[in-house]
Amino acid sequence: MSHPRHRLDDRFTSPIRLSIVAALAQVSKAEFRVIRETVEVSDSTLSKQLTQLADAGYLTISKAAHGRHTRTWLSLTQSGRRALDEHLAALREIAETTPANSAAEHHE
Image (cartoon, rainbow, N blue to C red; front, side):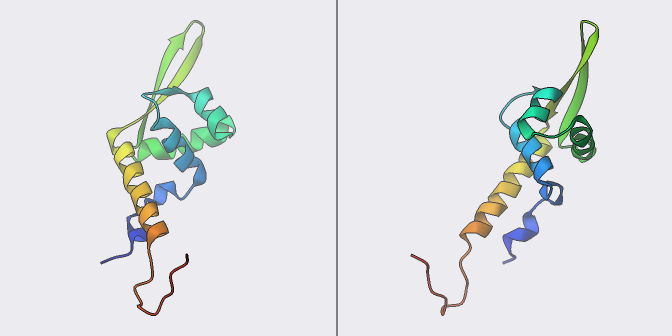
């Protein structure tokens, strides 16, 4: 059996990208500024991270006119949701892993 760390998604090693995907998993879609404020990053940092996630197929970015302004909307794809679920499951397994050696003591 291989260690669960092998199932971690490298795209989520960035706390910012993990935070973005986790926030989007809670809603059907969110406006750029809402995610920026939730994750507490600058516009340029968020844009860079969103591009990486969109290139991976984990989220969609769409723009809609709102008066004289354009709003950017973000939504998690099924692939992104599945990747997040698998990543979190692997993290839980890592956190719950006990040594295989019978000489190991349990912490109580």
